[in-house]
Length: 420
Image (cartoon, rainbow, N blue to C red; front, side):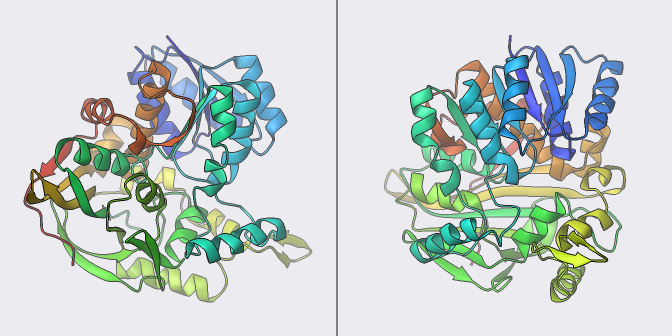
């Protein structure tokens, strides 16, 4: 029996909460908290009408305020806090969890809302010189909490979405069951879905567009190699989806996997994009709409990318109109018992099947299900130890079992096509 506080009520949060309701053996009480409590109340009423066996409640909270968060945590007294708000809010929620002595779980690592903030910029530029990549997001800010969570006897589980999250568990599972040594990891994220809009993003536009328009990077022999945005393109034939163009991006799990599996010689991340998406994004970037720097407009300050977000379709609304499938997984090469080996562990998810089950498109589904799974493993004590961890640092077997049980079955292909 456990009590969970979920912060956030967007597309991913709604999937995670509904999956918690399916896992009532672990979650018996759940509070949904957001800046917009009306969304939380609407979801609560929908789930109660459908017979959700978990006791639900709601609250209004500003996730940018440690004091507000701590007050809510102290009053509700959860066994864990699941952060499915914005990555901007990771640190305030971690601070509140430390203050209230409660375990912390999230799906994406910290990045700043204002990348022009002088204090943040100074630390960022120092990291760029030391590490060799220029992405606005990395684990250093959250790894800095390691000693504090250890001393408090608390667990912080970072990045239990799909990528990062499941892809990192796939790596731990491959190392445990298929390899003595892993030489290369290629993480492939293919969305073969079509929502019918000229342009839309499948998750939060601020995060998505910032990530995609940034420099790419990969890790080779323990060092970062940085590329121009979309410089490296490959074509891959994805099982159940077909042939797609994919591009090398920087992604946070590369950093964690590089630290936790130092023997791996090369780690890359690829994501598929259609030409229409790339053309729209480049045009928006060229006119300044992807900027995070505030500008004055008709006497008031606005942030261009936040204004763009208001114009674009809400990712949570894409479910009913998105058709097709996703395929996300990892291709590994290495050795087992002295013999060369290669495998591809992946999941295929159908957008319309996700919508029929939970009213969600597959991108929210593939992130929300693992968010519930990671939280359940922490709450049950199977993934609980003091400190700050990514999902590849625990026994992968119970996580892999729950993926099959809760809607994300995986496949192991022992003779995959490799990515050049």
